[in-house]
View 1 (cartoon, helix red, strand yellow):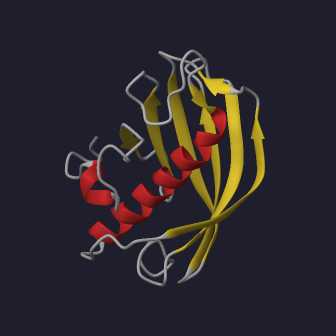
View 2 (view 1 turned 90 degrees about the vertical axis):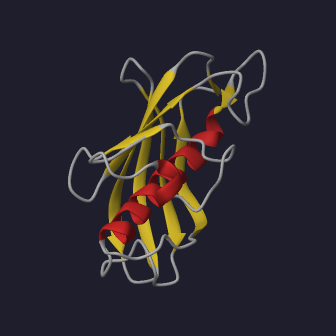
Length: 151
């Protein structure tokens, strides 16, 4: 749950358990963030016998974006700000469910950033590296976190 050994998810996301859906985060490249999720029966949105519906991948991507904004805010000495998911475009899912026991890798990369709005490309891959969800999300930060100035 740490990046650079200093931050835990609860310090980067404006969420509380059980609604923190991602398990760990890491920085693959400057400006990007990756996270992981292990699908278990304890996961919010788990539906036996299928698993977690793949459309929940939007929220995994959104929380990874929020963690990135939170990380940038903390590094700049600011508090984590509440942001809002405004929408998603080009959602593609190749599976109906994320199955029990699978480990997902989520990655977000910025496509556009301004003081109030940002757009990120997001993807979810299964443990074999297969791309199972792709989308672009647009978020509103109110000019506080996740902006070009704070990044």
